[in-house]
Image (cartoon, rainbow, N blue to C red; front, side, top):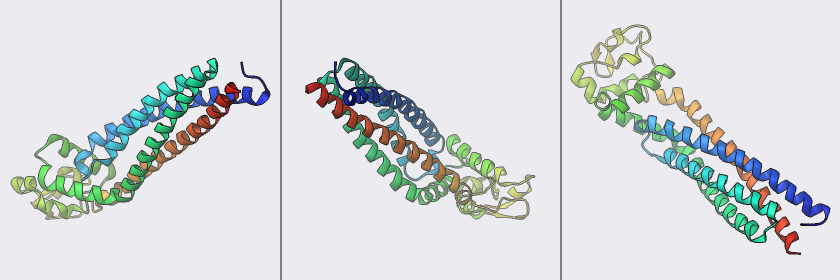
Length: 241
């Protein structure tokens, strides 16, 4: 049993921090699963899959943190230097992994608009109307954000499906009626009833705000983990004395 006010405070603080780590691990797991589902739903809209990589890293880190938090509590309760040192080593690995995930998220967020523009244009030109997942992804974005195409409705001039159907744009590009679909690909006979804004411009703020939320959660978790590492060292040194 550790003696003195300082070591006892370190032990109590470590237990509290590990409870917080459990809560953070659940948050990371939930956020990672949410990102993975969103990424799989809209993977045809992006030219790179970095978002899915970050999501799976968060799921892995969240699951590992849950187990590490349990070992930290056991080490603090039993006042075992072996468990506390092991806890510190594993927590250090998690912090490094989170730093890598954070860097990936930062790099991806700075290029996300370009990836989305390239990916959506490729999908519209090749896969729209050919693959169900790609068609549903584009239609969902166009309906939810009231937009048409990646840059604008003229992107559909390159669509293989629109050429085959002899149609200007999909129905999801129309405001209130289906009249905007008449014409040649990317060149509707009337543009009065068509969404004029491109989907990249319409949705980029929402997409980027999701990455800001992910970054904020990761920073909070990282702060709690570093604090837990410090107090585990303090408690381990007290036990050895």
